[in-house]
Image (cartoon, rainbow, N blue to C red; front, side, top):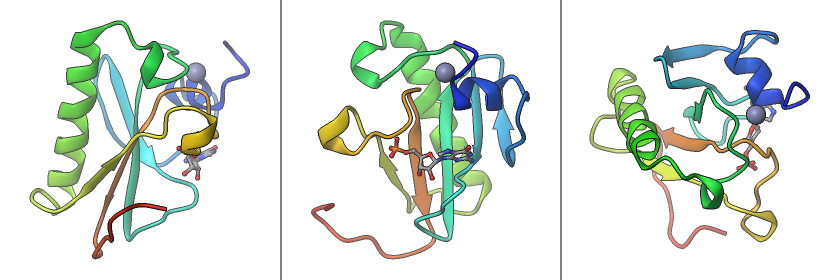
Length: 111
Ligand code: 5GP
Ligand code: ZN
């Protein structure tokens, strides 16, 4: 899937502000941050969306990475995790990603 922008970020074919990486996941700053802290956590392997994720262990690793990046940025106990899955949920990049947002007060319900 060489045309996938997040695959390219994971392989470092295109630059991103990477804040954390392991053998399985990469986390980098969102290009258009919606909060003072806004990082995307992705699997290195291409999975189009959460509803297509079959590897349960990888799901756990993504959650663990989200927790770690929030903690490393000083938001251990106050952050929001968002996964937009599919068109009607607002997904625009078709490589699974967890939004980790922090640094401000969030409202509920989301738009
Ligand atoms: P979605 O709407 O699919 O849930 O979120 C996609 C996110 O990816 C958006 O917040 C958007 O700002 C971010 N994004 C899209 N292209 C790039 C890129 O090339 N680099 C980075 N760092 N973020 C991107
Ligand atoms: Zn991809």
